[in-house]
Image (cartoon, rainbow, N blue to C red; front, side):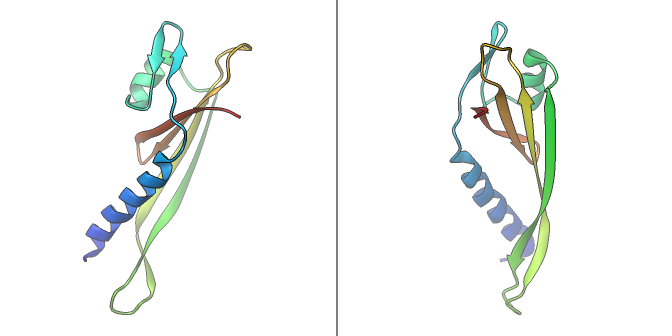
Length: 107
């Protein structure tokens, strides 16, 4: 398997891990937002997030010939939080490589 195929496989596996998280729909004013929406759609309905954290991690694969681990790419995970007032739980949106992966309540 070439490095590009391994990168895709690892990205799919990471997405599966993220999909295990709780996924909810939330109300922003008169709109309902869910993980099926793009980040742009969520932002247009809810406004800018109150906080935004970002981290990048190397994607490592094992070289079949040497058995050593090698870098095959980078994945970026963003966590955006919208405060929805004193009577509603904050909404946390997790975005992996630019795609919304989950929406959940802030514990």
